[in-house]
Length: 272
Length: 234
Ligand SMILES: Nc1ncnc2c1ncn2[C@@H]1O[C@H](COP(=O)(O)OP(=O)(O)OP(=O)(O)O)[C@@H](O)[C@H]1O
Ligand SMILES: [Mg+2]
Image (cartoon, rainbow over the protein chains, first blue to last red):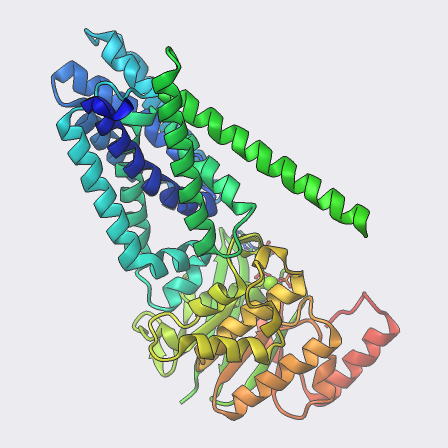
């Protein structure tokens, strides 16, 4: 049985937590037109992992620190380059992947570094489970407490400021939550896949949701489904990587919804 | 006390002088219409008033306070001209109107519904705003301002994209708000309504400064416009 192994229990625990919070953050970054931020942060997290392995720090802590640092850089740059703020994301992504590439050349155990690319559930240790629990608790409580502020700032930053929302603080909080979420997710699903888990469930739910809240809720359901499917598949199909499976299930699901909607529209037109 | 008091305001974008000695006042209960050619700086002026841009010289006072010291921004409602950022946002009309009631207590849904009724959009309260037409979205954005009951409304082309009936309705709403004591500064290219409506003033921003258009000027202007549609020069 799948759950008789401690490592599978851990993988499912971390996977479920990550699957709940990642699309919530994703909903915010997608609607802020910052879909690529997940990519930038997760590539930087690889630099943190490499640095961690090199200097004997827990790589997940290294990843978290690198994520937070690059998120801060992106925020700072976005304030200065206002017109094409997406560029700041691309620049940080390049810096992150460049640093990761250089540092990885000096890491003694390339296998453990590689496990961060596509995620690995076999090697999640106890601290990493607690880290994921703490991050999930933080993200969920922030959404519970500040949902209205988040929505308002994402929808119309200017009006939010006039209404007395502390826009700077809210944006900073969003950036920090994104950073810790990416670093927690990078462990199970893999640094290269985090961004998919952030964007694809949202892309799916946006085709169905009738409001912001509903879209967010549906995206969490999608993300849970993809993650569980990915975990089961990679357990039973030998050689299948968890992160890759999660991403592919997501993309297939998106394509199916898209095709179904087009099909439904066609039928409606023909009936008329 | 004037709700807005602007004295000798000047502003430039990277050396390009846009506003040069603009002075204007808007009182409580007054509806002031601001017109002027494209690119004359009307939207810029509104952004200066909400403190998003910093003036080069002159001063702006809101409710008797210099804007650098002004904190009561809740009293101020602003409608932007450019709605591209909001147009495809995955939110329902109700969610959007509810943002206008941020920080308030009581029956908020009731107030939001009331505002949607005012603009004739209660039937679309659960619609995704991305699926609405341009004019419908404009009405939703107005409903958000109406729900908030601001004391000062800064509206950048609120009538853009509205059909004749909706324009009339919107003017009706604005006049009622003015009667209740709100001040309103609205940018509009359509000054023909002024002829039928006895209240309110019309200002024109051109070549960096503001002049008030008198009754005769407006009448002449309208005739010119009818004579050369599409080539109106104020
Ligand atoms: N961010 C900016 N940077 C530089 N120049 C700008 C910027 N925004 C506007 N401008 C320039 O300032 C001038 C005034 O712009 P503004 O948007 O205030 O005009 P407007 O009177 O509202 O015009 P319209 O009737 O077309 O809305 C324009 O010539 C424009 O090119
Ligand atoms: Mg304008």
